[in-house]
Length: 264
Image 1 (spheres, helix red, strand yellow):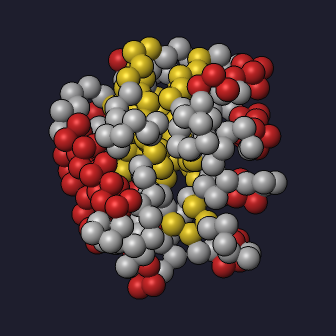
Image 2 (cartoon, helix red, strand yellow):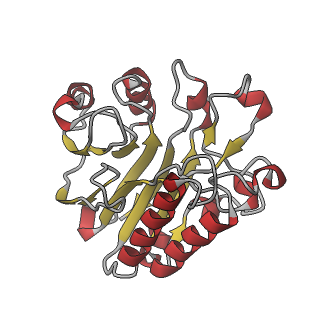
C-alpha cells in the first residue's frame, strides 16, 4: 500500500527569527517533512526544541553562523545524510537524505547571484552559474528516485515573474540563468512538479520582495522555489500547493512554503 507523504520547502530567512511562523505553519498544515533554506544558524544553535515538541524528531542540518544554511525536519525517519559543496567554498547550501522506499530527498539553496548579471563585473553571478554547473554534473549521475527541492533563485518561465519585459535583464530571470537551469533540468530529465499542477501559461509566484509597499496588491512576485522529481516519481505526486497567505503573516519571510503530496 502506498504511503502518503507531504513534503514542504521554505526559504525561511532565519529560522530563529521566524520560529513563530514556522511553528504556525507546521501546526496548520502538518507536512511530514519540511525542508528549510537560509536558516542562518550554526548547527549547535539550531532550535530543535520547538520542532520536537510538534513531533518532528528527525532533524538533519547543515548550517553556518549568520549566513545560508539548510535543514530537513521530519516526522518520518531519515537516513544516509549527504552534503555537496556545489559552491566549492564550504558554504552550507545543500543537505540530502534517504526517505521512504529508498527515495532520495535533496534540499538546496542556490546563491542569489548579486545584482549585475555579468560574471566579469559581479563575482557573485559567476559563482551562481558555477554552482548550477556543478549541480548539473551531479544531476547527470543521479541513478535513484530523487526529489530535488529548495530555493533555486531562478524563475525560468515568463509566467514565473510578474513582468518578463521588465525583468528580462534582472538577476533570477536572465537568459543565461534560465539556460543554466534548463541544462540542469535536462541533465536529470527532472520534472518541474509545480507546472504539472499549474499550467505554464498561468502566473505562479513563491517570492515577493520586502521592498514592496503593498506586496499583495502589487503582486510583483517571482517563482524561485521549486520541487522537482526524477521521471520515475512523476506519477507519485498527487498535489502541489503554494501557501501564499504565509507571506502576510507577522514578521514573514519574503518566500512562502510550497508543499507537494506524494504517494510512495
